Length: 116
Length: 111
Image (tube, chains in turn yellow, cyan):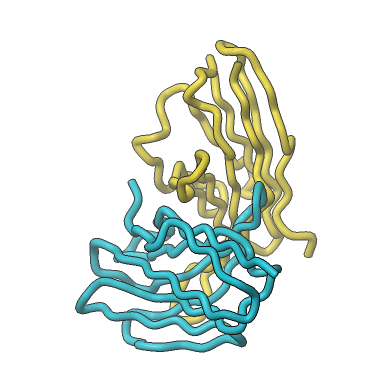
C-alpha cells in the first residue's frame, strides 16, 4: 500500500493551455474523488467515481473540466483552455466504505496548478 | 459550497497548552470527520464521530458532537509543535458518498 499518488505535483501553464493531472488511488479502494482547494479555503468537491462510473459532478466542474477513470483504476482530470481562476491545488482521494457505511478518505499530496 | 465553518479561523498557542476548535454545519449528517493538513500537503484523517455519538477520544484528540446545535468541537490536549497545521471538519450527509469540508482552522503551536 503506497498511498494515493498524484502527478505532477506542480504545474505552471499559460492561460489557454490544457493540463492533465493523474491520480493513482490505493489499489483496493473502489471510490475516487477529486477536490479543488484554493489558498485559505477548505477542499471543494468536484467529482467522484465508484469503480469506473462517474457518479456525481459538482456545478464547479464546468465543461472545460473532464475526469475519467478507465477500468476503475487510475483517474485523470483534464482542464481545457485554462483560466487564471483555475489556479488551485487539485486533490485526489480514494476510499472504500467502512463498516456501517462511513466514508473515510485517503488523500494524495495534491497537484498545484498555477495559470499565468 | 462549504457545509461547515470552523471557528476560530486561526489559533496560536504555546506547546503544552490545549487547543480547541469548533465546527458548525447546516444540514443533518450521518457522520462528521476531522482532518489535518500540513502546509502544502494533502489531508490526513484524524477521527470520525457518528450522528448518534456525542463524544469520542483518540490519543490526545477529543471530539464532541451536538446534533441539536449542528456543531462539533475538536480538542487537542498537550499540544506539540508538530500539531501545527490546518484542521478541517467534514460532513457526510444522507445518501451522498462525498464529504463536504469546512473552511478550516489554522493552528500554530510555538515552543
